[in-house]
Length: 105
Image (cartoon, rainbow, N blue to C red; front, top):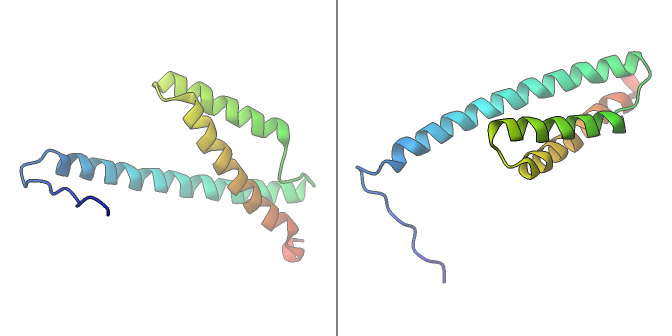
């Protein structure tokens, strides 16, 4: 049987903290949407230049960048790398869909 949900008092500082977290999440989503648009642009360039969606050396470069940036910001680099690799797989698939579309030419 699950434990009952805790209730926060109206004076709890958690309300403000949760609002800040929600605002940050909204900004992160906006940044991911911007990255997705850049990936669409990359797919168009790759199509014109006859490049594949996955370029392994670039994947490793981006993963290394994520680790380096995480260390600079005091974030766990393993977490950053795992998140970026997951994100890259999603975006490579996004590029691949564009490159595989027979209407692209």
